[in-house]
Image 1 (cartoon, protein in one colour):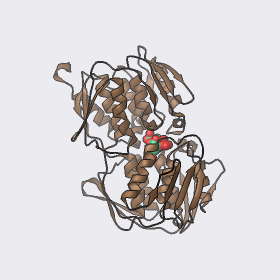
Image 2: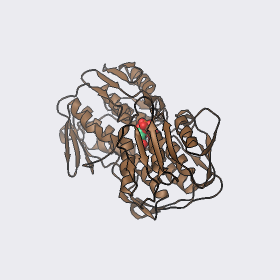
Image 3: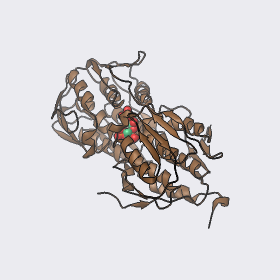
Image 4: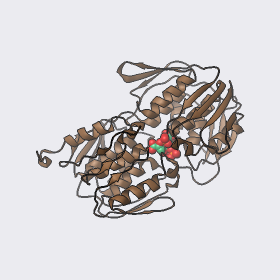
Length: 432
Ligand SMILES: O=C(O)C1=C[C@@H](OP(=O)(O)O)[C@@H](O)[C@H](O)C1
Ligand SMILES: C=C(OP(=O)(O)O)C(=O)O
C-alpha cells in the first residue's frame, strides 16, 4: 500500500549538519551471499536494514541459511542448505533477483522467484541464459524476466559462459559471487555494448578476494573465479555513499554545509563519485580521516557528466542540476531505463512538471534550469525518485511527493534523517 503524500520541507536557512548514513546496500547484500556458503559463521557489523537487505536475508533463510540478529544490530550468518522447494520474494531488488538464482542453483530442490509487479519488467534474460549454459535447469515463460524457477540438483558444473551484461553489471557480479562453489568455477565473458556500473563489479571482485577466492579480472570484459572454499567474514559495512548523495546535495541547494562521518578513504562504492561531481559543480569537498564535508561556495553550476559507472546517482544529480546556475548534460545511462522504473522517462516527466526544461535522450537527459512551481511529484516505487524529489522540495515550497515510504528500499529512515538535517541550520539562517 502506498504511503501518505509528503509535503517536502524547504530549508529555513543554510544547513550545517552531520548526517550518519546506514550501511551500503551493495556491500551488505554481497556479504550476505558470500557468507551463505562460507566455511564457518560470519559476522556482518552494522549491515543495512532496509527492504532490499531484509529480502536478501529472507531469501537466504529460505535456502536453509541462518541469518540471526545479534546485539548492536549485527547479523550472524551460519551457512546451511535446504532441501526441497522454496520460494523467494525479490521485491524490486536487483541484487536479490540477480544474485540469488546462481546460489539457489546449488541447493537440491526447485526454487521459485517472483517480485513486485514492476520487478517483472526488469531485465533477467542474459542471467537466466548464462545459468542454463553453466548446466542449471531454469523454467520461465520465455520472456526472460521474473517469475522463474531454478531447479537445483545440489551442484553446478560451471565453466565458461559468454553473456551480454550491457543491461546490468549485476549479471556478472551474480555469477562471480557463487562461481567458486561450482565444480569448474566460472569464466564469464561479456559480449555487447559496454558493461555499466563497473565499480560494482570491482566491489564483487574485492569482496571475493577478501574471503580467499582466486579471481582473475586481468583481461577486459572477462572474469574468472577458481573453484574453492570461501572463508567466513567479519566485516564492518561502510555507510551507503549513494544514499549520502541527497544530503550532500542539500548543502549546495541551501548554501550550507553537510558532513558525513565514516566516509571511507578507499572504497569500491560507485557512490564515491559524488565527491567529484559536487566538486565539478563548484562545491568545496573535503575528505578527512573522520569523514566527508561538502560546503557550498557560491551557487553551483551545470555540468556535462557521463554517469555510466555511477548510474544510481542519476536521479539526485538530475534534481540538483535542475537547481543549478546553468544547463547540465547527463549521458551514458541508457540502462537505467531498466532500474526500479524507467528513470530517464520518470525524471523527464517529473522535472518537466515542475517547469524544468528537460530533453530525454536515448542515453541521458539535458536539463535547463527554469523558475519552478510546485506540483505533485510521482515516485514510481523508486527510492531514488523520493530522494530526488526531496532535493527539489528544498527550493520549491509546496512540492508534494507521492509515496515517500518507497524510499525504504534502501533507506527506511530517510524522512527522519532529512527533517533532522533541516533542523540543523546555521544561526544566521534561522528564521525562528
Ligand atoms: O551490484 C550492485 O550492487 C549494483 C549494481 C548497479 O546495477 P546496474 O549495473 O544494473 O546499474 C547499481 O546501479 C545498483 O544500484 C547496485
Ligand atoms: C538500481 C538500483 O537498485 P537495484 O539494486 O535494485 O538494481 C539502485 O539502488 O539505484
